[in-house]
Amino acid sequence: MDSVFPLLNLLAPLEYFCQFEYHKGDLLKRLGAADWNRFHHYAVHVRTLTHVETDQTSRLDPEAAAAMLFRHPFGSSLLPNLQEVYWTFSHEECTMFALAFMGPELDVLELGLGVSRTAAVDLLKCLAYRTPNLKDLGIGTDLRALHLSDVISSLISSLPNLERLHLPVYYQTEQIVRSIASRPKLKHLMIDWAYRCTYDESSMEPYFSPSFLPNLVTFNITTHVDACIDHFTSKEHCGKIEYLLLHCPTISLASDVKKVLAHVVPSCDQLAQLALMLYPQSGMGIEYMSFEDLEPLLACRGLEHLEIAGPSFVPPTASQIQQMGESWPALDILKLCQSPGPKVRLPMGMPVTMLPVFAKAFPEITYLALYLNEDRVQFDGELFPEHQFPKLRAIDLGLSPIPGGGHQNQEVGHYFASLCTDLPALNLGCDTAYPGTISEDVLRREPEWLQVEDAMELAMRTKAAVRKKLERMKAELSIAARS
Image: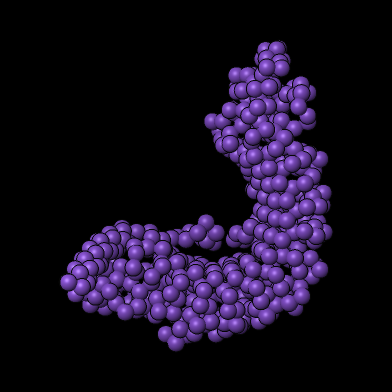
């Protein structure tokens, strides 16, 4: 169900719940047996509830919720079989109203807290008593971690069955980390990351108890080199981790990345997805990384997703790309620094002629993100070259300049299309975590990239028509041979 309003309308007009002060008598008269039977008939079938508040959304009065619960004849929960709630709050008064729909059967709860600190604290305090069996908890907010640390740590500690936890950026205070480590069934820990100028603004705790790690399958944290070495000391500590995201804003040397990987790879032998977010703390940061810095990762044969953000990646040689492909045969997503951070003075782009090498090395890839240089395209008109991307769905060029300097836009588009069996999406720009503003040079390229995209589409239509014609000719020859 995508809103709570239709449920309320089963009992009374919506304004009775929004303007309870003026309609209290009317609402109480309406809450009779027939109304509750009608409501309950539908309520028992609701398993999932989503409610998103905006400036235009009606504001629900918490006193109306109290009146409903007091007169509800079917137990303490309005929706007794509700298992999942996704509620985004914008109105202070609605936080307490929402509690009326949450009960002990709830498994999944995701909250967007766009309200004051006081309203958020009051809501989170009440949840432990109404939703003791939660397995999946997600919280999103712009409130500082120090303001909610006490109440969130208490909530986490009260949930013995918690298996998945998703927290906002920098919600890694000592209290929260300690409560997380006390959850024996937790398998998926995701703490959002984002670039901030002040790394320690929330008194972050980068260390997690080694005894907590063995059950984890997903581990997304902000940390530093020493903490990584402590965490990834042995297979016994983190042998079940499949997805690992490390936000390391204090790493300033590429050799430190290699050191971290040298500990991660042998300890996490089930690793399938790795993301290294290396956008730097103010005044620090890695400018360049190279293939040599990733060498420990070559032993990770089951890798399916690799993402590195922040520095500029020194273009690998053809043999190095091939070595990566042989080491990661199942790689599906590869993102190699397509948007170098503003600390990188002279980004080193990949020659566009390396794309066929990637196509040969990674036949399973569906998403490829690279930073290209301005080398000219040498396109000979061949739309069916030997090496193509058979499964590519998107190519992400981040903040790349246009090969050929904007003078070969049609050729660039035709060249990209020639390397793909199906038209991929062309993604440009940077993600929301990019630490800085996009330069005027990058913005000026947008119309030219649109020309490249148009040329890709035209070439791909031509390619599809030729392929269809060849298939028809092959079928005709086959019929002629049989006759």
